Amino acid sequence: MFSFLKKKKNVPQEEQKSVQHVDYEDVTDLANYFQKETGVTFEKQKSILKNKLMTFCKQRELASFGELLKRVDSDEHLKQELIDYLTTNETFFYRELKQIHELVILVQKSLQNVDILCAPSATGEEPYSIAIALLEAGVSSTKFSIVGIDINSDAIKKAQAAVYRQRNVRNLSDEVIAKYFHENNGSYSLKSSIKSLVTFRVENLFDASFKHIGKFDFIFSRNMLIYFDKETKIKAKEILESLRKEDKHPVFFGHADLF
Image 1 (cartoon, rainbow, N blue to C red):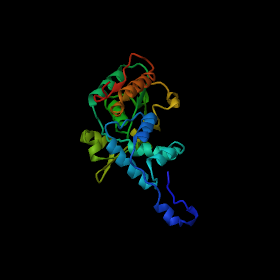
Image 2: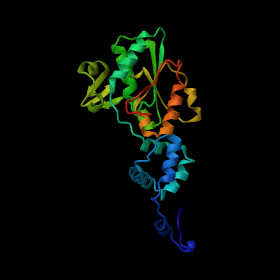
Image 3: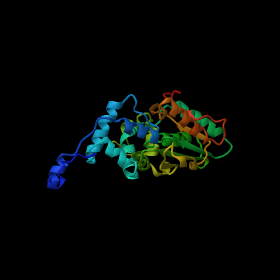
Image 4: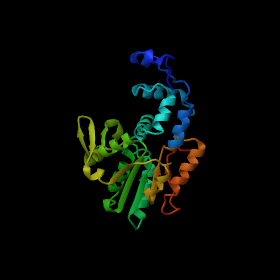
């Protein structure tokens, strides 16, 4: 990874640093590694990926993409930092509300308590939207349990904090905001009574240990598959469908998640 002068013993330490071989050219191996680990593909965004990885490497004084690949393969903390850096989590409350309403009706019809999974949960807007919609429809908080998972640990921390900006709550009515949030100078903090209804976990859908998460009555997985290639989409779909308690209940995919 590094190039040094032949007479290494005569080269001062400062000069050794200056002759390090910097290689930020071929991003293919890192892109393949990231897809293998997370399912996310950058096939049509190689230039964007390259620029982001260059910044990531320089911030950590890594001289090449090869050095980064070697490090993340053995350093779980750095690997999670890379995942957090390359995965996006922009969303908002009551997104694609029609599907949430469909879920509410199904929960109302159920004669038993239900378990709901949101994968991915991003920064919490979707699982919290489901909780609010259920409460607004008169469903008791004791009738449902919601688990939100995401591969991005930063997103999970934000979801647990549940502090949002106006753009995140723009689809909510003033009445709903007043009922479920504390507003302070443009900041909207979700009330503890709602936060307590959702459990968040950092999980990777493609980890062999993922199935320990359990079974669910209803599963939301919206706008995740758009980052996968066709083969990975099918694999993710099969994994999610295997988590259903009953096959008759479809997984709620986003409208952009085309197969």
